[in-house]
Image (cartoon, rainbow over all chains, first blue to last red; front, side):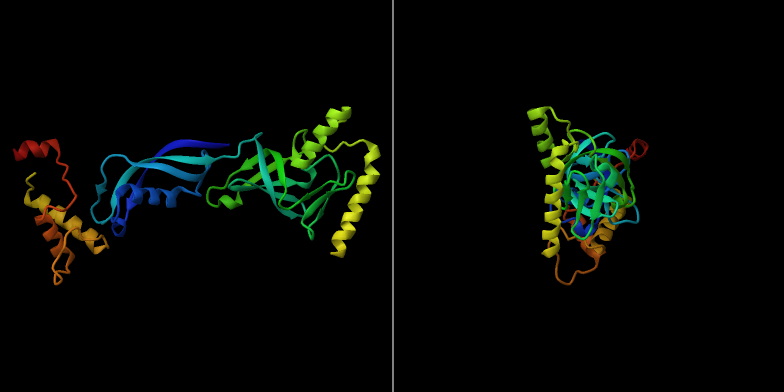
Length: 216
Length: 64
């Protein structure tokens, strides 16, 4: 979840930056030291605004810099367990797909994409469902639930966030719409459990699409 | 505020260190003055240094 939280800290203003106004300088320093930084309790800081000096700056013996206390508002993103997020498929690998969820990437494992046997087609950057014929490709929009979040403070990119889309109302946006429409029409079960009559058609379509992709 | 010679030394010294580390001068200085301590002294005499001294209460009692 994104939050805006008030924070305070001390910034070191180096002498060569004692040029223009104080507020602009400290805003820049706070930006460079906080934005993109990940903290286990707050999450990753996306941006900082409203940077204000708090009291006077201090001159320390032996250092020509000024130490200025500042207060500011930080917008942070923390992936919480059970949180529903929208994202974009960033990459398809043998074991699933990586999803951009704002400033961080999360993994949805093959077994958690839908109620179907998934195969990864890494060459064409997509996951294909064996029974339903549904595919998940790079660049598509999905809705998912966060099931595990282990954040790495030293290297935010190494953080491991696990997702699931194997629930009604989750998955690719098109699937959600499709399931909703089907549920309205005939009260059919949602999320990948299509009526059996549809299978051959979708399977054939999937094969056709694969052939077309192979020829191209 | 009237500064003691110790305070003056601290202010001029701190400012000279800032100048030596690349802070821009706050007054126009003659072209031949390049030494940060000299520039700092000129700034002090012109009253241009934006530094203040925080005196402790005990110091104020003794000074008065």
